[in-house]
Length: 235
Length: 268
Ligand SMILES: Nc1ncnc2c1ncn2[C@@H]1O[C@H](COP(=O)(O)OP(=O)(O)OP(=O)(O)O)[C@@H](O)[C@H]1O
Ligand SMILES: [Mg+2]
Image 1 (cartoon, helix red, strand yellow):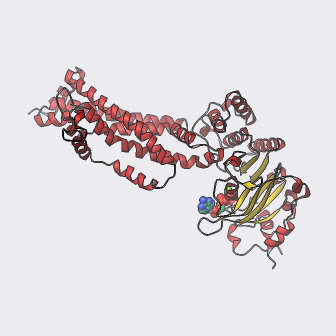
Image 2: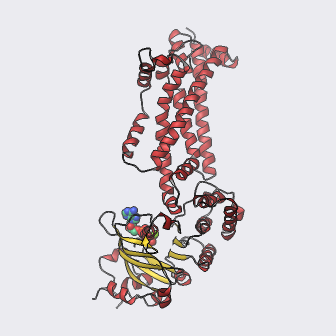
Image 3: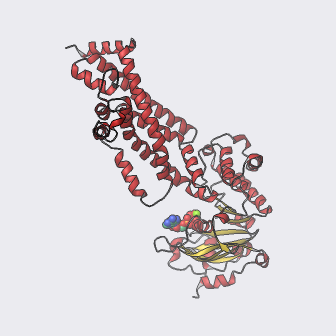
């Protein structure tokens, strides 16, 4: 077995040479994750905003549920999606199991509650600050939601980035519903798991480095957003 | 000792000119007791068209709460607010505007804050542009129009909040300590804006702790103590010869709300 230094050198080599397999895997990862995050935002932002901006009976219960769903165990989500999509399942005829679409579905289920719960918190805080002024101006419900979403735009971008960070690093759900099929459903995390077990450490480590870089970039983006929001007093 | 409160309300008749102005708004036995304890206690108050009413009283006396109740931001625990003979509703609220003790600025530019308020009231197009221009000029914020509103100084924010309220052309304007913590120049700028608004016929209800300001801007004074209205009357009269022990003690700088248990006794 090679020492760590040699493995790392080979891994860096793969990245620098833009190895075909590597690029394919990274591309699929990003495609799946970005699709899931976009769908999760399309659902979670308005839903979270509604719960955050309006009082209605059962609001506390919804909030508790949303917060609890943030911590959904990925393997359980994977299992449930698997059962739905498997030949015997209700969505079996769609033949989606072991496709990127199945992985997008699983990730969307994982990320939507995160986006919704964080959005609710952000919007509720802002609503607390604005409520009397809005009541005084006579702001209607639609204008209220629109204004809150717009004024919270920086915080909500961070929410989306948090969802992306969670999805891109997720392994348990996508490996169950995607199956980790070469050239079809292999994403960064599942490949790392597989190649490590096969002893093919260069590829695993190369993907690990890329994943780490993505995490760093996402967090840097969050910080930069915060800073610019604070600078312009929009925070 | 006779009940100071009864005495003052009797002696606190509003001036004859005030009685002639038509009634715009009325508080009838207005109370607010969130946890059983009355923070605003059976307040009866007349607000007359075109008049300037100054609400005074110690910290925690319930002044801000009274304004919120009058403006319909809080549901009263008892009594009612009457607007032109009818119960206060959303349509009535749209004829009023309020500037809060701490101005609330949207996370947008100065100009966008003005545009938002007008858009909400259904004012668009050239009319909105005209009013935004006017408000910027009034508040002397033209140079800062594109700046985020929340980086403005306290005085600038107060001017913007007032200009934003005035841009909605309310009939009645509530002002909660509009010049607290402002320097003399900013205070003067705000007082001029208020005077202009009044000259345009806007009825004003404002809270202040500043006796000079009350004299300059107030026609009438309503004095609150422990949630109760203990004295109303023409501003000059209340400031010079207050009838109630509470108002007298407060004007002499001897009143704290803690004294509530022992009704402030008149100076010996
Ligand atoms: N929503 C509320 N629920 C319960 N208590 C409240 C509420 N709002 C205010 N109070 C309390 O009611 C009292 C009166 O508050 P208010 O803000 O009206 O005082 P104020 O006369 O405006 O004082 P200041 O001069 O300091 O602004 C205070 O003791 C305050 O803590
Ligand atoms: Mg107050």
